[in-house]
Image (cartoon, rainbow, N blue to C red; front, side, top):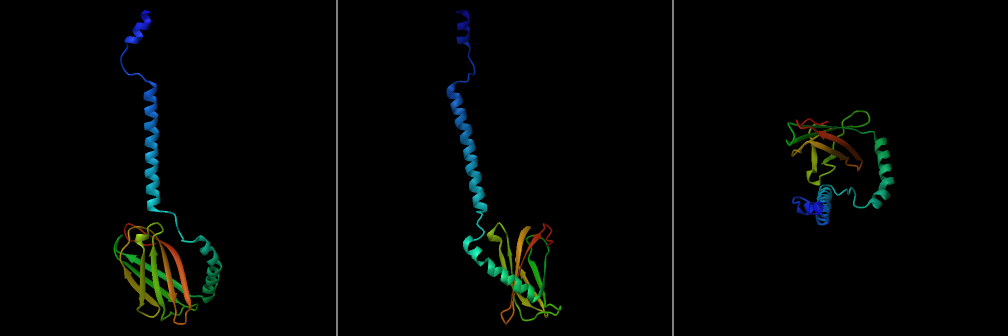
Length: 177
């Protein structure tokens, strides 16, 4: 009996069933709250939707292939040049358009779109004006450093269309590659 009374007199920290239960509830509650926050942030920054209707995009794919073949047969050579003084500074855009033989193409309606793959608020659309024959220029407000999809669309007076999509990278120092 002496050993039994000594154990009963002990004071201090003891793990009981109630403490284990509260510890488990707190642990899994904290994990659940962290997961909910991470899911909310992930969906809020990029919902993953690339096209409104994947079915419609699939139906239009054969027409896109035909347009690409027609553009290849056209033989236009379009080269873009983009420069900025620094990240966030205005972007100077120049497009050189030549035909199959290297002669400048004049009288085109040229538009350029710079689109961030992840942030819709960073998209820029610019209509270029022809200065010298075959040289189309424009300036748009700056973009932060990152990757962008550059889409060039050119259309001649007779309805001939050219479309090019390229990925560019704007570095912190404003250099574009």
